Length: 133
Image (tube, rainbow, N blue to C red; front, side, top):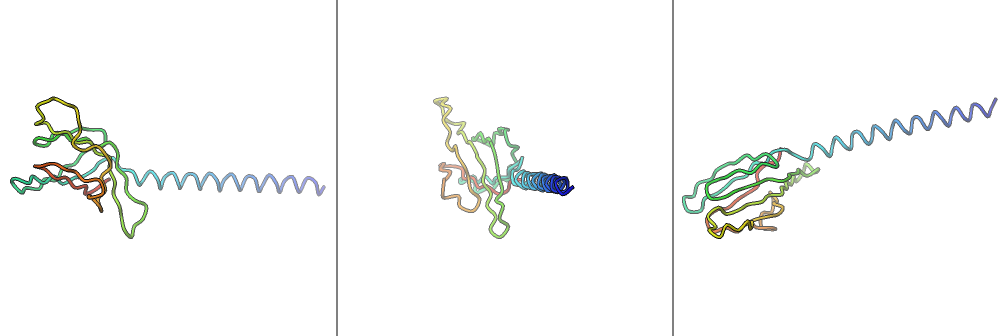
């Protein structure tokens, strides 16, 4: 009789362990999915006219803004609330390039809090990452 009780307790503990593992996996995966966004907002400064333009781009889409072609690949918000960091993978082409080269003016990760880590270097335009949602 004691043998059956031990087997029953083992099955019960195994069941509880599986339920807790599933709930942990479920909530962790939901938290990580909330960090990634589908849209970015960037601010484009025209250095000649001194005009700022707020541009909203869906990830995977490419937009044309004046002489630039801007494509957002992926964006992500940090998991820390006290000092939020927004990162986005962005590709920018200069459409005034007469060589028809498909060379990017900027191709990499952009950081909202530290744009100088990987700077966007263009003689006419400047780009800042504002939001990922």
